[in-house]
Amino acid sequence: MTLVLHLVALFLLLTLMLGVVRIWHGPTAADRMLASQLFGTTGVALLLVLAEAQQIPSLRDVALILAVLAVFSAAAFVTRVVRIEGEKTDRHAVKGHDDD
Amino acid sequence: MIDGLIFGLQILLLVSGCFFFALGTLGLFRFNDTLCRIHALTKIDNLGLGLVILALLTMTPSVASGLKTLLIWWVALAASATSAHLVARAVRIHEPSLPDPLREREHKDG
Image: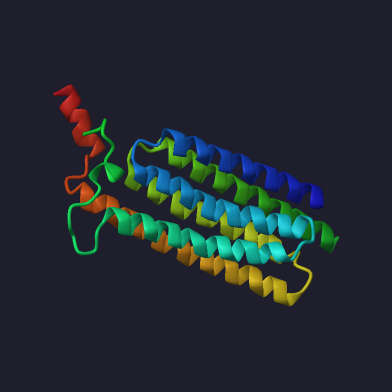
């Protein structure tokens, strides 16, 4: 059973690496932000699987913290891009230069 | 007999969870528009996470860690739902006339 869990963990790690490719390639900052969301969900699953496979219960707390921090990163990105008071925002952060 | 069944169920849940994770990541690449990517990423990855967590629930040593896993699942669901909405709203504000793929194709052909 632990072999299966380790294989699943390896597979999730590979999906994470695919996310890194999107971060490198992503035209707009919003796409890069999506990849960080991918890290949020896939990272939580990876940590939970490893917690079960290697019997390290503290990894579950790490997964919980990662899930919460994913929201903070998205909130930080959005507040930087979309000023709440609506002043001039960082246009190129969202729309790529090339696809205008 | 029973633990063979449970083992099979766990394998099935884990494999389908990984399948949906792969699908979500594939969606992240396949769709050409940020909003479609948000859609693919959030929904499918959460389904994958849910399946993996269901499989893990059957293996947890104690009730406490099982409840903690469920808590993590719901926090992850809420986290990705809100962050997807935030990012989508940020993108939406900056692209009022969202480039509709069909319209783009007409422009190219027309």
